[in-house]
Length: 155
Image 1: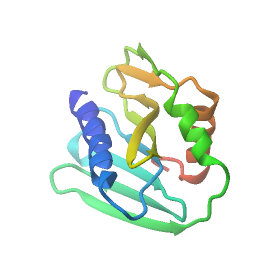
Image 2 (image 1 turned 90 degrees about the vertical axis):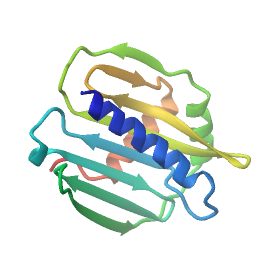
Image 3 (image 1 turned 60 degrees about the vertical axis):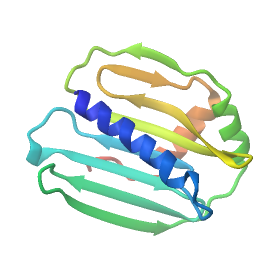
């Protein structure tokens, strides 16, 4: 289970560092989902990154010699996302134990550009042992946008 949480946290940190210095487009909404405790050949991680003009869906199968699928779809998003991101960034998250060992993990995050800095916002995460939620209406709406744009995980 710690491996799953560690992988999710490392993925989130990698996203933050990978786009921190980039002057080009970056994903402003992201969902990462992973299977729970399973045999290595059944391990699966799906990441959906939403940009302003496209969506990138990455699926990784297995652990020893993983197979990867990457799909890019064009999209056009409009609306006042900056106001929603700012509201979600200004809300304190709530952490609670779930007590479900070996369950899958999920992470919903947003990236907000504040001045020259990109701020990572946790909308909701669940590693099977701990759930972190952002109780703001903005976070709920952004999570719904992610679920509406990204395909159902593990379909």
